[in-house]
View 1 (cartoon, rainbow, N blue to C red):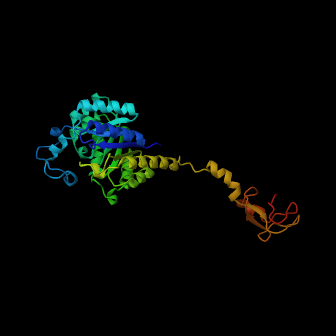
View 2: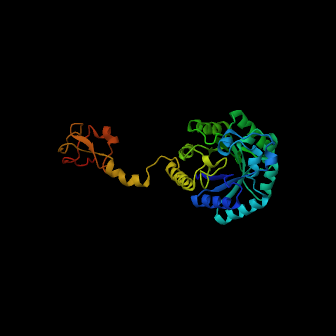
Length: 333
């Protein structure tokens, strides 16, 4: 199964359309399936007095409100159209996460086919219903949520028109960067088994090891933040991969997919050619005369595996030799 890899540009464009285009080019060059931005209107998203999150204060300072910071990072409808056109030209899917109902409507009007529910909206009933009415393939991020909240969100989506077959639930830890020991990848499997849904992983840990482990565990979607330069000022740059790291992650995921195989236990093509060389056959341990009884004293097992299999040992022991056998000769009946 091919993993759907989402390169999360988020707000790492810093409100600069040229930089946003460059992020699209990087994601396409890395081999990601989609590049994802964020769609919001700061005045609809946060109150004027809403404080920044701790990670936002650490990366952008405390001198401005969260709303003031977000205003600089908004993408206008015209910018969305330009970025979607650039994605089409680059051969990569455009996605954006909407943080309010009007932003959802904008993305739908622009033809976006998949939708992403961010972790912060998993308990937003009106928002969930709005997404659910779209009836589209949906990614549900579950940072900060417990199992009951995930189930409630899935029920709301289903009641509104987006059934569980359309939803991929993403394990996520809402910290930037997230400590590796809080990634809790097994929660992804718990949600898969409890709710009967496809699962994936939205990663905020440093490096690429944790999303690779998620793929090995069965994630069918991986989402990872990336940036042009991790040292750039801004809320998400420090917790993002740089271009070379994003490309390395995609390559490694594709390698893991090959290694996972189809689950059928059978000899591989290369193994079939090696079987004769490394398996064993029943052979004469010493010269054996015709009529002599085969026993543990005069037969043994050695390579190559082109004769009688040692699994037939009990069938051979006690029988009379049909002819003379030289030392190391393959036994025949």
